[in-house]
Image 1 (cartoon, rainbow, N blue to C red):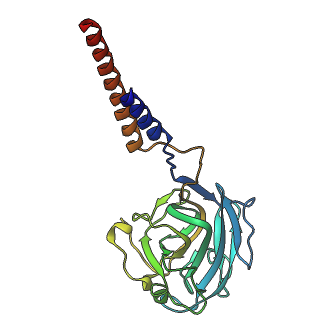
Image 2 (cartoon, rainbow, N blue to C red; image 1 turned 90 degrees about the vertical axis):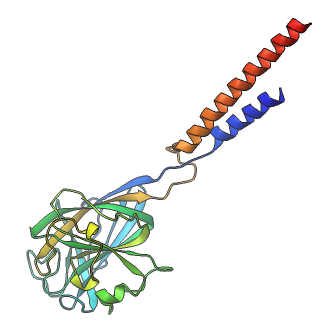
Image 3 (cartoon, rainbow, N blue to C red; image 1 turned 45 degrees about the vertical axis):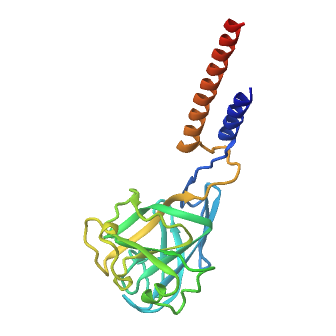
Length: 262
């Protein structure tokens, strides 16, 4: 009887283990979600909020950043306007007359997995960075592209030839952060692992695009009703059932032997 109780206890522990799964968050930037202007943009995606602020370098490559303005175009996405920009196509995230960069600040850590653009002109090569330093990042004002890499920012990769309304997979190393930078391709950030720039040609001065969607994983929530069992939990449950069945069978056989002996 003790063995049966032990098996039952083993089963109850195995089935009671709560296991949560990461949730997928999709941030589609639309006119109903975005509040854009000189102070930046705000939007939400699957319970996670985000703010976007913009900067632009004073010249191409490794010059310092200054404030820029975020702007939203219906159906096309998020662009950046600097003091040097005038009209199309310079109302986008571009690397002509300076390199535009958008800082996405999320309310919690996000493991970005893909980026989609809703508009481009000529070419769309991008550079992606994540903040992996301690605390919150310092202001980008007065910093340079090379300076970012010594200020807690990590180059995730350069990605060539994005196609409109087609998700571009990024972040192969599954880095998680609350702060992400999406820039028109900037050679001053240095080289990235070749796997981060498959195919295509990375070039400066001819990239113009607008960001329309970001997708990624957010940390699991405690008590998430969508929690799912991991394979290890299923294995424990299976082993518990087998143990319970063998114990019950053995007890039944011993009971039969005692009856015959009597």
